[in-house]
Image (cartoon, rainbow, N blue to C red; front, side, top):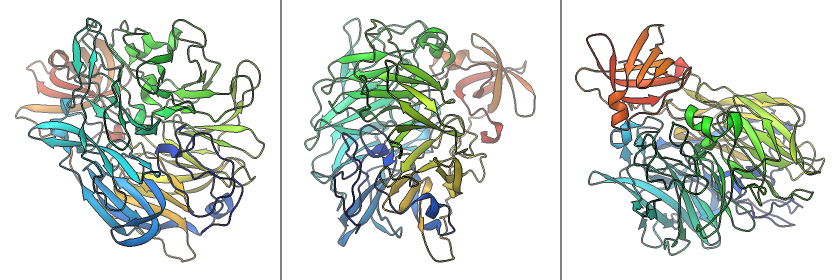
Length: 632
């Protein structure tokens, strides 16, 4: 148990047990600690920069899991599980639809339960490889401590079809507290016709949100394939009963578009839907038709930060970038704004107290008025200010420093950025305070951070990050710790592996009660302070070849795009050879993610007599050849 101490509590905190006097272990019950998505554990007196930078900080325990983990671990500081007495428990959900309850200190698996066969990659649209070999629990669950309930959405493969279900589980037994509910929904398109939720073409990546007595989920697509069928959704259910809310938000309501390419996905690299003190829901959408002509502020809210009413009935405001880096070019370039998440800042001093920040693939972070994203403009909106943070398949964090000013932590490209929040005047802005370091990674740019501190006490803040793999074998990922005040790295060590390198490792390090948790491929790593000389070992994962078997005569080639003329694409392979790709068949079947010059793709098909690869499937690939599996 901890000594009572004064702490600074965030507004609308759902993950930390905020009080003026706090004793005992904390809970981490939602993605990035709270509904604002700050990623800040502000009750951490043990893991100071001095301790983390010492030889005592190391891997102290681990646990072997059955599959890749895309969801962030959650922690209950005092919980009975499966007949064991109250312990600190970390809950981890895998892509095999398994949930583990693990002793948070020694890695002992107290209980595990499987919720059905996951959807194999062979049954995903186009065999989308932006994931592991299975899709099961892809989205971070959420825990309601007031009712002692874990809410989670599973994706199961039943009778040849994908089926989503939302569950309400007892954290002691992992049993369903009420009958799980199959996810269904319908919405009206612009011509009055009905569009029904399509589990086959919908992917749940963004973390769940518990707010307003409801559980909310945001759906996306698998890669950019099946774009004629897939559209973004925000759906909600009443907590406790799992009764679906009467309203939902269908992000793309167009009946037609130039290329029958819809999407407007909500994926945010797994970042969570956010919620304000007033209960409004915030998220960022991705790309739509690559013709660059389908955005509409009512019928297709692509490439936008969105403020949605708690009952999901009304888009209250919308920020859509305009100009050279505006929505049109973002759609044309497949440069999604929605590759990154939206973070709400705790109330700041000044006339514009409620601020939101968000950045995407082009690396511009917008500082926005969360109370009115339009900021009085009829179309699109206006940002208070912008900051160049680096290309971001990622999401920001926040903490308050000892000087009393907030800090935004960015993680574009491979660099940690520290930005002071200046909310005075009419245009709040971020002021660069430097970078304490960088992380390894050769997947798409960006990574995820968390922050721990002992309130705002000077010399206690630590920024935590997990890098991405730099190769496909052994495909290690490492945990990093940085001192933001002194601008230096404190720690770096291997924390697991991520061999399915075509799908980004969107790993969020979770800090709680003197420990740091990293869930990766088939493993949970637990770091902490230890006086023993020995360091714990990570489990050795089994190797899974997730690539689809090729049909007789088929080939699979990776390369960098040098030119595009409609469906005729020229690529340069890893050995410098030039390959002409005819993507007509892939395009006709909506098994084509629109390529972009200078970036990598994977093409699968047959080679014609003239050497042209007649592609059945064209997908995006990582730009670094070290991430590419062997051509076949």
